[in-house]
Image (cartoon, rainbow over all chains, first blue to last red; front, side):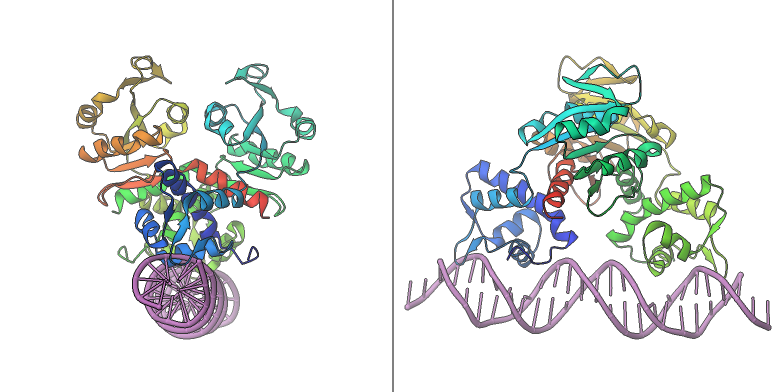
Length: 208
Length: 208
DNA sequence: TAGATTGTTAATCGATTAACAATC
DNA sequence: TAGATTGTTAATCGATTAACAATC
């Protein structure tokens, strides 16, 4: 079952299912039908069943889905049962915010270093994490088994940083720079274009 | 022409067009065809023409689109020709990062106050912006003609904050809390679910 | 005018929803 | 067993792409 085609739309719903199932699990809900879940999440029940069935048959006819089991399955599918060694590139506002977010630790994201070009921040610590010279990214990735990088630089230097990361066989890039990076398919790239999101909001305010 | 139906997918592409046109404008490019733009942006040329035509005929047959003019038109459509008075709720990592982001000023987002419940941060300033007691959100919105709020609280208090904002006729909410807020259609809501985005990345790393 | 490129209609593709047989 | 609900196929809907007449 694992090899069905999974569309972009399905992938983007997975974290939302995971979040809702965590919530239900915390509330002590033991099982839920696709119908009940569809009402909770404002989605179509058929769609929910179809989405889950991309990854296998997790339900039981006549009963529904076991919340805890489904949550764990989705966690595995999302790769949340694994550990990730992470570096942050850019010690500006966003870089510092991500470095300070304590939720990452609980979820197996180990931030091992922050890199910047600014001589004044190099050598300091942010939330207990060392700030290193951006010139040393390559060697640090190799020595510390880094699998992910968060790009928090200005747009102008993002592509250069991306190239260095790709060269060093990084597995995934979480990009906060407002740039459309050129990156081979072998490296997973996920963009958070904050200003795009803000502009969608201003559009809606003016066209609601 | 202004009243064609504009799908979600089209709306989400608008900021990307705007960003690319800004770039072209800065490079001094005066005009561009949908074909050339499609190659730059990795979209289909028909789609681009169709997208723009949701809002009117901005091109000239045989010539293409005037970059500067199209950029300005898209800016108007996105509401970027207007001013927005903004408050930030939550002086944690994300709230502080947004308060410190200087790009907002240039783009007509005036951050007039930050609100928190923590007695230690109330009374301080972040990037020159006062931190106020969250109890005073309602009166502040009324007195300062606030049109937008950025929710940067924990998930547990986000809905309560949202309700207060809605009560005070806020126009738009930019929500960073990992929660699916309940909000009437009259208020525009745009979510930035950072952990959802990160989990899509871990999914991709493990299923590439 | 001829050539280029838009604006728009028609065709295709893919995602969502409905329906229902399978089965717990 | 009867009732409930899944897993999956078929129908629908909407978005993307192709084609081309209109027109600069």
